[in-house]
Structure formats: structure tokens, C-alpha cells
Length: 264
Image (cartoon, rainbow, N blue to C red; front, side):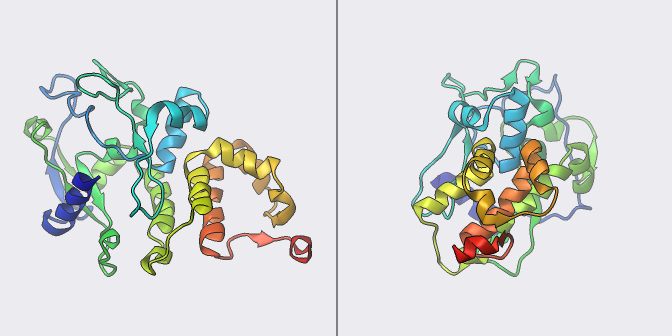
């Protein structure tokens, strides 16, 4: 984790900051000498939307996906739980989803894999609240894609080509939680609220069961039509999960409490 923190600091302080209109040259495809080499021995943090897409792609439950394919590093300085993609226990520590022909879950690959070699930084994570998010190019010795052909992209073109619209939408909603000013005030989540965070963000199947099998619906008044959406649509459930976390973690009035629950 210390290595990751050092990289974050270097990005914020040393990497050239790019806008959506800035250009770079890059190509990744079978035949490039380093093809697949970047898909091993790497720390890939999974977003809630990454987990949603991957568990549905594999046709398994959230619990099964988390148990089989992820790690949850523990750091007492973390404001919230984070999820890492687990590598295989072989010599190259390769990703579970890579083959000789490339990524086997390519259409549902994680946010970090889609963006590469472009990165997106949030300076607020380093207490620079007046700075806006910016893009940067991550150049690694292992990657030969910068030397392949003359394919030129703007950052905006790259994002469209890599199908990042939905990932960015859910990324913004996630940041409203992880970069909340609650943490700026030096407050930390206790264990029960850490567990709520983990459930609503990462374990959607458990969160759905929590809504429909507990006293949740007796206590909270949800908008007409919302129940059908969150019962059958994981994306709607995740959007609602972020709303719920603002209520449960930060006491924001994002969900209405039923009058009878208040009086009882």
C-alpha cells in the first residue's frame, strides 16, 4: 500500500496534467511485443460498477465474486473499505481473466483497464480542494504501445473508444461518497458503517436482500416505481445504494423516513 501511496503523490506533484483535448499516441493489440504482459502482478482497485459488471458477466453472485476474485487490504488509515482484483498464484501472478488471445471479459473489463494508459487523478484525495480532476499518461517500461504505429488520440476520443461513459457516471457517484467532506473534517466510519459501505457498494446481492428481507421497507418511503427498478436492475440498485449511503453514513436527507417509523 505504501508503494501505491507514493505513486499517487508522484502523480499529483510531477505528472503533466492533461485536458480532454490533449493528444497522445498509443496502440495495444495482439502482435505488440508486450501484449498481455501488463495483465499480471498489478494492483487493480475495483470500483462498485466494476464488480457489478464482472459478477454479471461471470453469472455469479456478488458474494461468489468477492470470495473468488478479490482481496480487501486492511489499512487503519483508510476512510472506507477498498477492493483489489486478486491475481492468480502462479509465477507471473497473472489476472484470472487473461488468455493468450487477450482479456476474456474485455467488454466488461474494469475501469482501470479501460482507461490505461490514461489515468484520472482527483487532487482532493491529497487535500488540494481547489484543484479539479485531471488526466495524465502513465508510461511504464513494460508497455511498448507508445511505439506502435501512428494512432493518435485525444483524451476525449480515447474515453469514447474505450466505452467509459457508464463507468465515469458511476465513478462520479462513488466519489461523492469517498471524497465527502465528512472525511475532510477528520471523522472516520465505525465498524457497522464500514460494513454498510461494503454491502451497498460491493455486495449488491446482499444489499438487495437487506432491502427486501429486513424491516427496511417498513421504515423508509421510496418513490413510486423505484422498488421494481431496484428489484430487477443492478445499475438502479447501485444508484440507490449511493443515495442510501449518504443517508446512513452522513445523515443527509436523501431518503424519507415513514411517519409511523418516527412515531414508533
